[in-house]
Length: 515
Image (cartoon, rainbow, N blue to C red; front, top):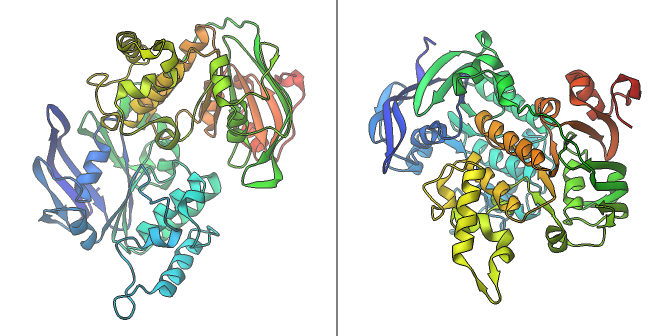
């Protein structure tokens, strides 16, 4: 990559207490190109991005801007120098409007110390139109779905008109059409000379948009290449030191009796009651079985799993647990009867950020440790330590802050919290969202282990590769309807995508589908 770097790092190290997050990293990103940065959770990607964006200072080494050494005292210095960052975890204010979030701390001045709201509104409409998102700027962010909030975060960075744009997991909550629009915007930015640094756990997606690739492992830069010269297998090998196929669990199937049965389930769209999110879906899950639900954005996969967990009401149909009706039971009763959900958004719905690792783990299962009116802290601590070991959370201990963990380890805590309730049915909504390829392997291994212990496991995913490798049986949803049921290895990726998009019909059962 013999190009003058727009932004770089020279021999950068970063030490937090006894942890060395970066070890002598030399990094370059060129103007007019997309540099994709890959690495497992804990590899140092986010730390390096925070240093480049002025949020953190290096312990040793320095940052270079257009070939000149520079030192940012704080993020505002970097922003003033033309560097914008989109963080992995959303940093929006839910009680403010879209427009107020877009211009927070960068308000357009009007007359006599006022804010020029009409100019802000026009600018907001322009940037949202550029992202092809039809949003009213006066809408509260709290009323937006997660993908729309992600678009607002991206729009806020675009409004800065930066010449370096750092994107940390920008597509983690976006639908396929929204990703396509974002990629079009990125190409427009690079065509005008903007330097884009793109960090993502979606390897295939990132490789599609990248011009250059950089791989970190254990705080060290281990590989660089032009994107056109490498493939997915090369990236995985550089990241984790093993090939991609070894990341998916293999196990002997011991399928038991039917545990969960769904019959003719109908669910209204919570955002548009005149539309059906789920339309007459029927299926079952047995003990020891992992059933996957694959669907694109708008397929109803999240509404399906949230209805089974009791978070959304069913308009009609039946849900049975061990043959007994479950439809009228709320979330608390379903947890008590053995049905528990691992939600898609771990930060909003899965974790309490002010609590420790141990407190988060035991939160949903506190009744297990109740002795009359008191909690047995000894029993609770023993159960927490056992679960930390079972789900292999990398932490300094049960009293560590949940915020000190990587995204993959936080996801293991959310799964462990669900398992602490002693479930019979484990529901997981996009369990690998926002975690790296190595952590994904750990999550899928946990699912396989729970199935081996006799749990009925149902998970949904929008990742075709996961759908084709992880479940024992695969359901395909399209626009709220079940359009196929397969042994995953009997269906091609092309047919899977075509079914999910509604462009193909369900093949006959002789081709490998189940009735």
